[in-house]
Amino acid sequence: MFFLLGHALLTLGSTWGLPAAAPLEMQAGYPVLAGVWVNGAGPYRMLLDTGAESTSLRPSLAVKSSLSPQFAVALESAAGVAVTPVAIARRM
Image (cartoon, rainbow, N blue to C red; front, side, top):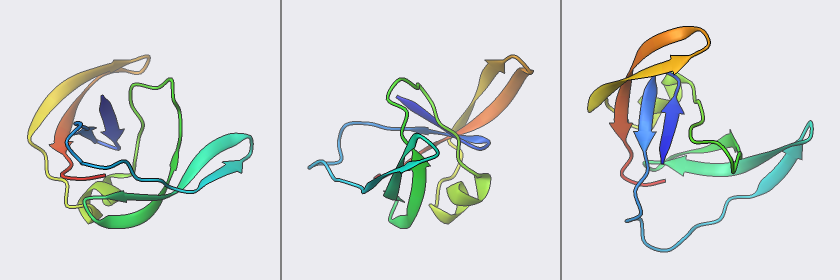
């Protein structure tokens, strides 16, 4: 599963141990997780979209979460193609 972090991409694996919980709030009809931690930084509020393959975060959040690019991918959208750095989170 890939998560788009502003201009960085976060790859999530399945080696984090026990599942964790974050408070869920409804805002303007959208489910928002209110206590998400990335690499020990947070808590952050993130939109929960169970059908999405990716989600976007501000580049400043990637920096605060100590995410550093490991490689890059080309992402295609209606606006065109953009080369996007990829980072791997140690924990989420």
